[in-house]
Picture (tube, protein in one colour):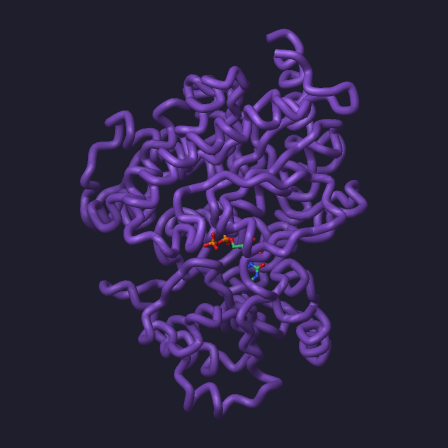
Length: 467
Ligand code: UDP
């Protein structure tokens, strides 16, 4: 393989799974690679590329591949199974075409960095004579569990309520603290297959990267890198402005699949509230809460008595309990369809984040020193919530009933515990502040992730020039 150009040390193609929580970290990682002298091209599906607002100042080229659903993307597919098959079949073909096109245009690639959700990309990269780099967007803990399931080392089904789940490098887990696909077997078979099969061909990848940082998951990283793969942790992947400030133009993620409310509106509202008094509530880009859970959450927030900002996507707004919401003064409750979450979390006025525990949201809260109320819904969120409460001690978990509903009294209790000024609130707030320093240090010059990225770049450049 010839090095791609004299202008940059190597050229990589970045291919995320088409969802907000996957594009954000992989695009951010691309910016880091560019700052280390690589050229990066981001490949999005046609549907997503059409719905994102391009960032003209970006130093990253944008290309598209087809997932076979150019009009509606994965939300428009008749089933997740069908989408995954189409994405693999059509995606493999159009990705190979893209790689050949870039070769022809004199912008040859050296490596494809692909989302762990898309293991078939490794086959395409190898067929096209490129290095294959897998990038995992969930924690080492979660992927370690999936690995043990995939290899038959963690027998399923898990014991239903008693006993604990033992996976090396992890604390003992209650069964319901395992990822939902593992605990609630059979509920989402297509996602189960996709998540469990992430590790099937990792042994053949040239590099293994994780969107986490060493200090956050020391035990899991140590066990996995001694026993599974020589992995490198390269997070947190927030814009540099919120971490080390070394990348001057890196102030935002730059991709929004939903239109955020303007910053000035939100910050004017926040400025009218004292420090650490406001509760920020968001369940990310995909969660689909029951109307009854909406009602319990709304009542719980009202009972807790702290002003709140609640992100309710426009397709979900009909689930809000109208009478209650109309009775709360606008200075006490701000409902927004989407916002710039980092700007909100950074505000002094925020005292707590009620979150579904998507990994990006958890890491953002940690990096900005905001304690959490964890309300996990599915996928990796229950495991992230376990770590939030028991390992990192940066929040409290709201307990759900048998049907998975968190009642209003529980929402009230948790919010009061974190923002109310009691001992537990002080403990999690202090711990969040300490973790913020550790997270920032990981990405600062000479920090654990900074060193890992440097090492990755050096090895990649050297492999690219010799193969
Ligand atoms: N986010 C945002 N504005 C919002 C809500 C969320 O910018 O109003 C961003 C958030 O900062 C995070 C991502 O969307 O980077 C959500 O990712 P996460 O892993 O937390 O959850 P997912 O959407 O994948 O369930």
